[in-house]
Image (cartoon, rainbow, N blue to C red):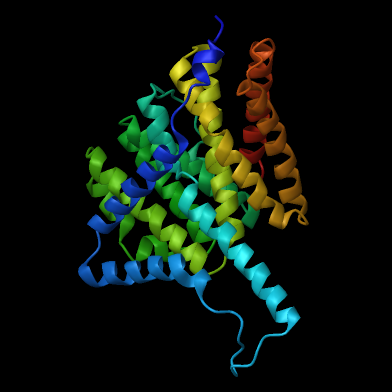
Length: 314
């Protein structure tokens, strides 16, 4: 059965989707915070929004900066802009899972990365990547009412964050017991996942551990694409394909961010693989439909190989 690629390319309005996901996460996050915490979080968001507008033309003594200082300030400003673009514009794994679920992506038993694998990931790279993969699997199970599986993946996410010294994300909010108490209540579980996502983003930004943030997002993106393409391989659903093609923009941004670390061998390999995946998405988003069916098969193969390499990497 062929896919109607013309229909699939119509897609959603990208800006509307991103604005919806930011509002969705922020509302859920603030719902679980006391007044003092809300003020603190508001302060963080305000400093993020206006921090780049502060005067950088004077040094601590009030004298004009040198050319070198100006150059450094320009680089720091560019880095800050890229960071903000990542945290504010790229969709969270929860939101992407929600989009696919609404498009009709059903639960397929055995398709996710087994939670038992969590203990085998040793390197910071594999832990960061599989943190994203497990976050997507957690969202996938939660939105499809797989409560017991969701608990396993929630614990797998915790195993990854513990290994990356991000324990405070769970400890400060007593997250695991709260998640277990709310099994069967999808709205509460989604709220807890949104809280975890927001706290993770804030912590990674505050501690300047952006490599973990980027790798985690890469893992989440790849796992979402893997689940979607595995379903499309067996049952062609134009709505799911449409949502998959919509993710091309976020993939382009991710590749750009990862290039800040392309001096590291693992990053270089990941960038090459993701760029290859994007090349197929570019073809599928193009107006020339002649090669689309063949290109879709290539996309499935590329995503499958990349994802399986990552979940089997220690």
